[in-house]
Amino acid sequence: MTEHPTSSIKGTAARSKGPAPRPSSPPTPGIESESPSGPGSALLHTVLGPHGYRRLIQHRRHQHTALGALADLICTTAQEADRLHAQLRRHAAHAHDRYRDALAARGGYIENAEITAIQQHPGHAATLYAARLGQQLRQLESVLDAYRTIEPSTGI
Image (tube, rainbow, N blue to C red; front, side, top):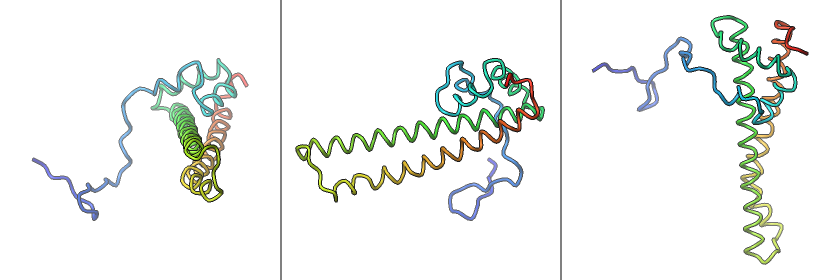
């Protein structure tokens, strides 16, 4: 039995100094669907158009090339934006449920202190997710600009 080196944190394995191995799995099918599932994939569909979007997916399949790596980065960035959007929607639904439950328990009336208490966690988390989503969409626009510079035949 081989032993793995341990890190200074008890019970964890040490990380290797090299880059993390790239998963050999094919691209995630969600980003390749024809119907966008969130703002990241919707932005790709809108900016690239149907022909350009199909070319992006084709380029992504050739990850051993620079254009393929960039296409993979674009798709991964779009997927992260979609994930953050879904998380933000879950927080909004949770806050809505808490307000509804509080109103039902109090006969339709809530004190200001109760509203503040209800808003604390979901409100803070929603603010963080909204800021992170905005940052992710700006990053997606940046990598899309680089892609359009390299691959001008995206139908734009």
